[in-house]
Image 1: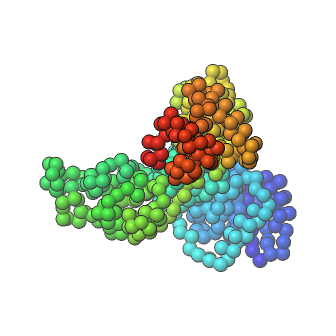
Image 2 (image 1 turned 90 degrees about the vertical axis):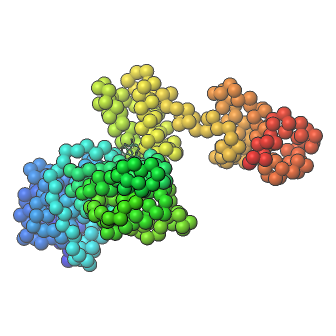
Length: 484
Ligand SMILES: Nc1ncnc2c1ncn2[C@@H]1O[C@H](COP(=O)(O)OP(=O)(O)OP(=O)(O)O)[C@@H](O)[C@H]1O
Ligand SMILES: [Mg+2]
């Protein structure tokens, strides 16, 4: 029989737990405060504790801290209705087993508790004890309620408690640098330096010397000795951004630092020893670079010890509302004016958009909207047209094709859907001459499909070859086609 200890000051929660876990395999004990829970643990010897974060008296995090003083292995699941990053990270850092957001559905709760109990039973494994840190009052500013982001927060917390190398991946603008800084701020190295280097922004031949320094005369132009970032950052944390962009020589040196903590300055032959924690990030698929032999496989595995994969914003629309509120508050604070509010139509439009630029794009759009909004409320008209009116301004054949496909209609209805779209664009952009634009687009496509064969293309278009030729000249198409 598994013993479960619930610590929550709400009678309702205790009641529902009793109902949910009324089974012969589980013995549930409930405590109404942190203090009571702490007293019960040595008596009950639970296999698993599940505890609320916000409680009167000793709160959940403090209780967890006290549990960990005497018991490093007991798995504790934290619950809260308020999904703040700070708490999730703090809880994981203190060694919580998991972190749940209320309200949760019953099957999921059962599944998580079942898994935790199984893990406790099976493994009886050493849960590494992390040194307790003074809790900091640092506003991380990472927002997200989606499950994917909650998992990221948990990982940040776990990474903060260790010195492991981490690889952060995700599309541009998903928050990779933010996460790297969060790991650093919560880690024991936070009193030491944090250096961020964008490997893609530094010319290839200079990167090695930037990272590892050089001796005087190492190469033309090396007029004096230079101390590199790794040396400057001893005891600290280095953030290697865009890690995919480095020469094989630099890759080899990075691998060596990771393995042995040593390197030589460019042109030098004394091994220098450093203690640097490396956090790397990339928005390119490194696996592909490895397969193409552009990136060392051993380095990849060495960096990939813990992988933090940031989900694109379009996969977590439930975070959009939170992010918008966060940015509005942040802007208001920066400019010392009360935050503007936002109309429901705006949120709807934002949730529908596909966010190629992810959170960075959202942040920019909110900044812009705050500026252009005339009153206290941001309205759909304050958003850029590509958000309120997807497809607007699209004129390339690919976009046209995509638009016609997404119209979801076939044959004549499809044609009229596309032409309707064209008129919409024409109204927005008077430079767009609808008929010639469509004609030109069709001719280009026909020529592409027939690989430039004018007889076949003319047939496809339902015109004579002579007419086609005239149009090709008129629209100056040929040059474009040969380029494509
Ligand atoms: N979850 C989040 N909560 C709040 N702000 C966020 C979040 N994610 C990203 N941002 C903000 O979005 C912007 C872009 O984030 P960041 O620079 O970390 O992205 P990135 O993944 O490093 O992008 P790139 O690949 O283009 O370098 C920053 O201003 C950051 O503060
Ligand atoms: Mg970045």
